[in-house]
Amino acid sequence: MTSATATSLLKSLEKGETTSEEIVKGLLDRVDRLRRLNVFVHLDPDRTLASAREADRRRKQGEPLGTLAGVPVAIKDVLCVDGEPTTCGSRMLKDFRPPYDATVITRLKGAGAILFGKTNMDEFAMGSSTENSAYGPTLNPWDEARIPGGSSGGSAAAVAADLAPLSLGSDTGGSIRQPAAVCGIVGLKPTYGRVSRYGLIAFASSLDQIGPFAHDLADTALVLKVLAGRDPRDSTSVDTPVPDYTATLDTPPESLRIGVAREFFGEGLDPEVEAAVREAIRVYEEAGASIKEVSLPTSKVGVAAYYIVAPAECSSNLARYDGTIYGHRAEDFSPKYPGEEEIAPLVRMMMVSRAEGFGAEVKRRIMLGTFALSAGYADQFYNQALKVRRLIRNDFDRAFKDVDVILGPTSPTAAFRLGERTDDPLAMYLSDIYTITANLAGIPGVSIPCGLTKSGLPIGLQLLAPAFAEEMLLRTARVFERATDWHLKRPGLV
Ligand code: GLN
Image (cartoon, rainbow, N blue to C red):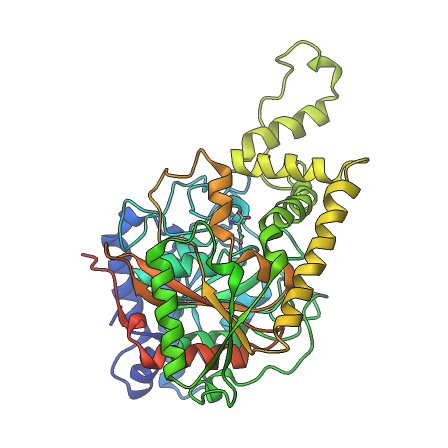
C-alpha cells in the first residue's frame, strides 16, 4: 500500500478497499523504520491520524470530497502551515510557527489532502544537496552515501522512499527538478505565476515557484490542478484558465516537435546521463516525434546571471531576519571585540542574531547579493545580469517558434556523494546548469525518470515548454512515460 501512487490510492479509497487511516498508519510505520534517511524535520503523528480519520468520516457519510480526499502529501519546510513548525532548514526559524497557511496549503486542505509532515531542505532553499540544512542532510533512498539533491531533497526523498505518495517543493533554480532527477521521480516546476507563492518563505521572489513531486505524470497532473490559479494574495499569480491536466494527459499532442538544445550536451555532462537522454530522444522518434537541434546560446552564462540575480534578491528578502520581530534572537550580544562598544546595542543584537541564525551558504549569498547591489557595482553586476536574463528568455522564445518542447538532461550527473561538493561552491552551483535558465525565463519544466546508471542511480530527463503550456508539457512527457517503465522503478529499501 505505501508504494501506491495517489491515483491508485484514490481508487482503493473509493472502492472501500482501504481507509485513509490505514494508509497514514502504514506510512508512519515506514517513516519510523527509515528514520536514518532524515527526510522529515517535523511530523505530528496524532494530528496526521486525526485528519485521516476525519477524511474517512467524510467519505463514509457521503459528504462532498475533494480531488485529493484522504491522500497524504508531504510539505517542504519552506511553506507556512498554520501553527506547525516551519523552519526553512534554518536555525533562524527553529521555533517559528506561522499564524497562517500558505495558499497552496489552503488549496491542498480544500482538496481533502492530508498534510503529512514537513520535509528537510537546504537552508532557505539555497543548495543542491540538502547538506545546507541546519538539521543534518537527507540521504538518497537509492544510495544512502549520496545526496538526494536539493534544495527540496526531503520532499524528493519522501516520494522516492515511499514515505508519502506526493510532496510539494519549491524551485528557484532547479530545486524541484534536480532532486526529482537524482531520486528517480517526477518533479514539475510550473510557469512563474501559475501557482501562488503566498506563504512560501521567499528566497528570490522573481524566480521562486512551487510545484509537486510524484511517482508519475498522472499524479503530477492531479496536484497541479489543485495548486494552479490566480490568488489575490500573490500579485504575480496570473489569471489564465487552469486546464484539466488529468483529462487530457493520455492524449498525445497533435504536434510532437521536440527541440534538442546543443548547449545542454556540453562539458561536464556525464556520459551515462548523456546516453540515457539520447535513448529518450530515440524513444520519442519512435513515437513519431520530429527532432530538431535548437540553440540557446545565452544559456552558457545562465549560472553566472543566476548567481547575481538570486543572491541580490535573497539579500533583500532575508533582511527581515534580524531578531526583532521573529526568528532567532541572540541572548548575548555584549561587546566582545575592541570598538564594538561603539555599536548601538540594538544593532549588535541584530548582528549577533544573524551571525548565529544563518549558516555559511546563506551568509555567502547575502554577501554576494549585497555586493552586487551596492552603489557603483549595481550596473556592472545586477543590471548586467538582468540583461542576460532577457537574452535567455529571447533564446527560448526564438526556439519555441520551431519546436513545442525542449529536451535535455535535468542534471549533468547522477547523485553525487555526501560531502563531495560541500567545500567547492562552484561545483555545487554547476549541478543546476540545465535547470536555472527556465527560472530566469519563467517557463515551466518537468523532470521525469529516464534511466539508471550502471551502479543503479536514477537519471532524469528534463522537458521545457513555453510559459503556461503545462498541459502540452505533461502530455508530451507522458508519451515517454507510456513507452518506458522507468517511473515504476523503486529503490530496494528495507
Ligand atoms: N541550487 C540552486 C541554489 O542553490 C537552486 C536552489 C533552488 O532552486 N531553490 O540557488
